[in-house]
Image (spheres, rainbow, N blue to C red):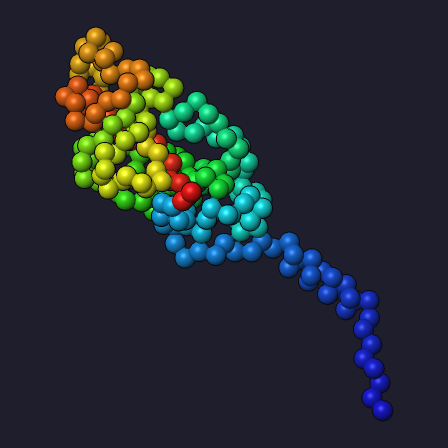
Length: 207
C-alpha cells in the first residue's frame, strides 16, 4: 500500500510565498495600443474603469490621485495622473469623464482626429470642415469652443480650449473686443489675426 505523501513546512511556506507574490503582482493592462477614441476609450481605459483597476494594471506608484483643473473652466475635479514622471506615457484623466490633454501629455498616446496642443486655428477648422464659435478670451471659460456649427466635430465628446498667441498684431482696443463672455466666430478677421491655437482639450466618454 502506497504511503500518503508528506508535505513539510517548507512546502507550505513555498506555496504561501508563491500565492502572496501572485497577489502582489499587478495584472497587466488589457490593451494593444495607446489610441484615444472619443466616446469609447483611452487606450485600455473605458468609462467604467475606476482608480482601483488603474492601480492593478499599472501599479500604485504609477497612479497619482490629484485634483485636476478642467480645461476652459475654473472647476476642479478628483482625478489621477498616470506615469506622472514619464514624458512618454503621462496622462491626466478624470475616471468616468475623460482625459485632459495638454502639452504635458505623454508622446506615446495617439491623439484623436488629428488634434494636438498647439494646433493652429485654420487646421482645427479644417478638421471640423467649417468654422466654429468659442467664448472670448480672458474670462472663466476663456477660449472654450461651444458650437461646432454642424461640422464634423459636432456631437463628438470633446471640449477644446483655444489661446491667442499673437495679441500684439492688433491694438489693445481691438483685442478688448475679443475678451469677455461673448461668442466669437473663428472666421472673424480679428480672431484670425491673433492666431489662436489649441491650448488643451478633453477627450470624453459617451454619455
